Amino acid sequence: MLRWAIIFLIVALVAAVLGFGGIANFSFEIAKFVAIIALVLFIISLVANGMRGRGGRV
Image 1 (cartoon, rainbow, N blue to C red):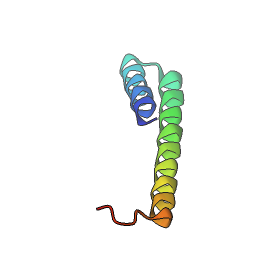
Image 2: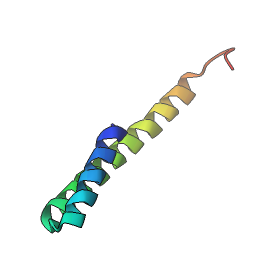
Image 3: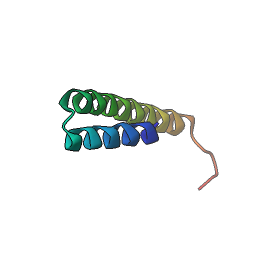
Image 4: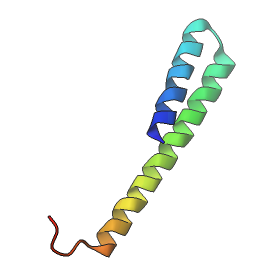
């Protein structure tokens, strides 16, 4: 999922350099949204894994 965020960020940067402000803004907003969703899912995964416990594994 972070791969998609990076792809949209690169598209936004290229569009900004080429002068396409609307596309750059839209791509940046998508990249930000996908990155936030990935971060939320990562935190939920950490919490769920911590609550389940890994008895005996290091």
